Amino acid sequence: MRDFRDAKAIAVTLRDALADKGLKLSHSECLELTARALGEADWNTLSAHISRAASAAEPAGARLSRRVEEDPDSVAQWPEVARVFYERHLTPDDRRARMQASPWTSIFEEANALYGRGADPSGAEVLDVVRRWTQLSSVRGGDNEELRRKYAAAYREALADAEVAPRLPISRDVLEFLSPAFLRVRSERQGDDAA
Image (cartoon, rainbow, N blue to C red; front, side, top):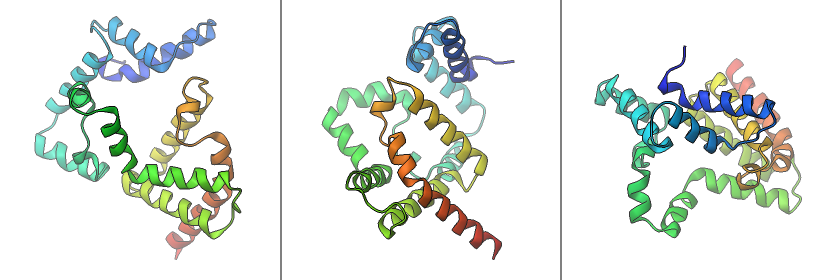
C-alpha cells in the first residue's frame, strides 16, 4: 500500500488514469494535486515532508555516506527542499552557470553539436562522447543495470510528453543518432567484464 512517501508514483498513476479519461495534465500538475490530496498545501511542502521522513529513518552519518556513494556530486548540490532559498539568492544566470559547469551539460552539448554537424555515428568523436557518458552514468549508478533501465524508461516517458520533450537536453533524434555508439560501448564493456 502506498503512503505519502510514494507521492511521485501516485502522481504518475493519477496522470495516467486521467489521460485514460481524456484529461491530459503535466507531471508537475499531478504532483500538486497529489500533495493537496494528501493534505499538504503544495508539492514543495509535501516534498519537504518526504525528505524529513527519509532523514529521520537513518542517522545523518549513514545518510551522508549513502549520498556520496550514490552520487559523488550530491554533497555539493542544493537539496530540493532548499530550492526557495537558493532561488531567492541566486539569479537565473547564476543557476544557469552552475548547470553549465555540470559534466552532463558538457556531454549533452557535445552530443547535440556532433548530431547537428552530421558527424559519423560510428566515428571516434561520437564514441568518445558516449564512453564518457557511460562512464559518468556508471559512477553515478554504480553499474546498476536495473537503475539504468529505470532512468532510460523515465527519459523515454519524458520524451513522449509534448510539453516536456522540447525542454530536454537530448532529443529523440540525437538519442537515435547515438544509439549505435551506445551499443558498441556496451558491447566493449561486456567484453571487459568477461575477460
